[in-house]
Image (cartoon, rainbow, N blue to C red):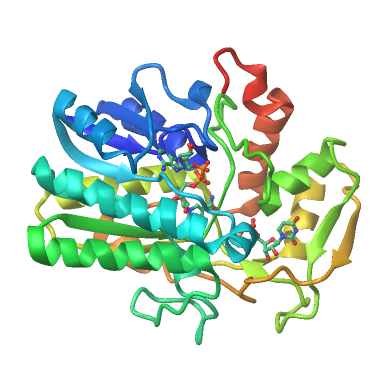
Length: 334
Ligand code: NAD
Ligand code: UDP
């Protein structure tokens, strides 16, 4: 039977498709390529271009494929854009989940692994953040994902569709051989932006705010390597295949790095000066996000291989240097 990966042409989705195939799974991918790249999808996966919200299209895919479980990455995920265009986020993210669960229910598919986010917690009351802590998002992106978690909960109660919500903290890095990596247009994430400055594509980095209540005044985040994250999805699938109940797991390293520390680490890794200046706060940014991730380690058996941001940045820098224009350097790019 096949695993259907929605958003499998995106950054995290493409690494997960790759790891699924390396682990012998039969994989089908749905992606509308709104932010993803056809060239990022492992050639052993069957690819269907279309929108998760298009029920006719999704019904056709579910009719063609013998689907055991779904991994759902397909969403918009840019915090500042969500502050300006909240309805775009509720439409694609939350609306997409409703269509998907309807199609899954109609086809009797009972397992879903879902990309949730630390943004569902909002400004935490305590660090590290536990799965049981209050979820009070500070931006529409986080709110759209929290709504998706709740919709899955009620679909479990009503239809027995079991889910694992994986709440990622900050994802970075690339496959070690540099064959796939992060390529967003425009890029908004810290690590690839720092590396664009290192590569001379941008003049300087702007750090968004140095007046937060943190040791050096800049935001603190918890970075996890994309391949470690991909592996957690396989463990979550196995957890559901073993007949376990729906649950949520944080995925992070349990260590925080400030934006200034990330800049210093990237200067070390690249050997480049990477000019930077301070700018105003970015709307919707919580001050510190660090995961308690012992639950995923204990229950899913997750053992991240990358525990040092230098190593994570090194893999992203390798991808950047071998693909200066991202997937534009590859045949079949979208
Ligand atoms: P991405 O934009 O690279 O990937 C998303 C993929 O989904 C893209 O290929 C896009 O074309 C596709 N897509 C979007 N809407 C679609 C739709 N309606 N129908 C079909 N395909 C659609 O993003 P990413 O960084 O790989 O993130 C993947 C998921 O992980 C997202 O759901 C995001 O919310 C979540 N997440 C990411 C991070 C991070 O640090 N990157 C952190 C927390 C959570
Ligand atoms: N950030 C920054 N300058 C940039 C991009 C990001 O200072 O050009 C900061 C951002 O304000 C946050 C951290 O880097 O404190 C991580 O942001 P990112 O968008 O990578 O991930 P998020 O934490 O929003 O999921």
